Image 1: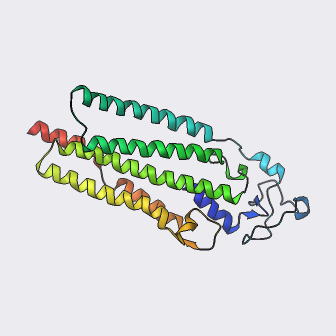
Image 2: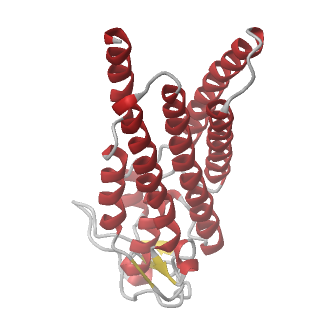
Image 3: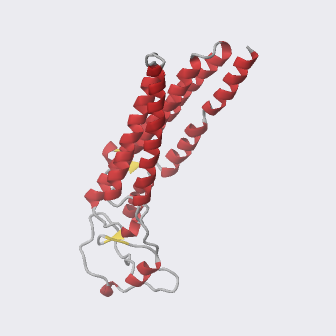
Length: 252
């Protein structure tokens, strides 16, 4: 989602003539326009901002977090798949069929694996590099934003379904007020986090501006979604359920 915000900042005044621009770095003065390769300005972008000079660019970091991101997510995907397969093996070994919690958990894993594939694709477009190292190509930027937006939606869906799967498992072990509390967590988590997934797609008008940041239109201020995501991530506390359920069983 940060890439989307950066792209919108570029529209607001950080790109001239297809080149990323910024305020002069300490110790450097703005390069005269005559020193900069003359290129036609992009439609709707501001004029009169000098691009970074080669000397300024040389002072900036040029590392690429993309390969590290790809290695990390696929290692974690492999570990999660191992645990999922062990769970399914234990079910079949004990001649137990799959229940709703198993099916939902499998769906959650498929969502997070698909999200990882989309992030891997995004790194081939420049995701993971510093913004000044990414060529300013509007179709590439739009593809990157769309990929990580779909990936973000799938990531939230995976989180919702994995929490719901765990809660459904606990429903089979509890009764009384504990079961009612679990249902409360299931409902509020699905609504609260579901809205986080939805807001990505309805934050702009027209809707297409969410992944076409350079088209005409308006979007919510970025802090609106950031603050709501912080709220929705903590509005339910399923991590407390094992302790409550365990206490209930020991006292029962």
